[in-house]
Image (cartoon, one colour):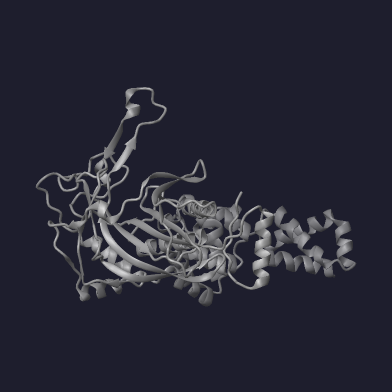
Amino acid sequence: MRVWYRLEADTDSLYALWRHVFIRLGERFMPCEAVVGLEVHAQLNTRTKIFCGCPVRFNVAANSHTCPVCLGLPGSLPVLNREAVACAVKAALAVKCRLNHESRFVRKHYFYPDLPRGYQISQLDHPLAENGFLDIETRHSGMKRIGISRIHLEDDAARLVHASSTTTTDEAWYSYVDYNRAGVPLIEIVSGTDMRSADDAGSYLRTLHAILRYLDVCDGNMELGSFRCDANVSIRPDSASPLGVRVEIKNMNSFRHVEHAIGFEINRQMELVENGNAVAQETRQWDQDRGATVSIRNKEADHDYRFYSDPDLAPLILSSDWAEDISKQLPELPMARRLRFIGTYGLSAYGADILTRSRRVADYFEETVALGGDPVNVSNWIMGEIMPALEDERDISTCAVTPEHLAQLLDLIEQGEISGKIAKQVFEEMLSTRQFPAFIISKNKSLQLLDASEVAAEVENVLEQYPSEVGRYRSGKKKLLSFFVGQVMKATGGRAHPGLVNELLRRELDD
């Protein structure tokens, strides 16, 4: 296995150390730098397609949401969806892009069964937005700024459905086309060449994914392809050298796949160069089963697509007033919110990160705290009880346990009305019945606390059961108090007030 490192310093001692490492591995030392750029395609959360009125729906009958425009039939004319433009503008503003007052649509020609017109409507020299950036936090390099070269609008292709490879009939030789996805609005977000590793790429993608979901411009569903990525990878001897030959890795829809594919491709290119071979400009794809990128075709150049302005679409003129109105709708973004949760609520960095990955979860947390919940307790309950009970964190807005329910439950614990163990039982019933905790406790006597006399009787029983431990406690082993507390709570099924148990035990043991 080949392991590659980038030399970060040029001191003689460090150089000698790294050289020794590579010699021990049987490798010839060769300092170099990887350069990674990403092209992210995000499907926009619009009700209809980008150039026609067909609804955007998934998991419906094949070819049930189509019309002459999205099927590319002769004589049909596209009409731009205002809602799609608004979504794209929000995304551009969130990553600090400069909005262009005028942008233009072009036809990008290539022939494939999923492209009904024989061309894609996209933007080239005059995109919607340019020159932005995204600050990311990497695992190994800390904070880093990644440039955003451009954001442009385009329409999606149809979906190919391939017959099963296990089919023994003639159908095994056919693929079917579902045009429901043809014309779904996309934005393509093209990064600069500022990433130097698979770790940088993974951090960039996760940060961008969270922002688009916060804005509600993309649902971020990677399994369905709503958020997918192409990676461009090259290597060069050092940061002062020109960029190397670029290899594109197409259509990855998993953070882990992107990281693995980029890591493999960097090593593959380095090995080629080390052995005196040239890196070919080509398009590859990630084969998860083989754990490798595999070549699928030579990489097209811009002239292969025969770009030219779309004569059916006028230039998109973006007014400054409308852009200003959209900017006022932007929410607080994940990184800023995470820092505020740490500073304002005293949460750990880990807890703040978990809670702010989803805007709905962060909103749920703040609503509960506003109702009087202790921030740290609220955070622990959301992460420990509520989120594990959800199939998807985006469902928290429809969770049976509302912020009002959770705040009341935590208040009952704080006031000593129920123990932590009883609270867990109440919570389970809240999930299934949608009832307030106080009502659940009042109707169920098994969830109510024992009175003082009942608790005192259980304390006496426990002390009688463990005479040797009582003697050890009285001889100075004061830590045994927690043992007695646990035994009383166990005997009462958690229905004893912990404070009362401690008080009664100390009274009996310290006399």
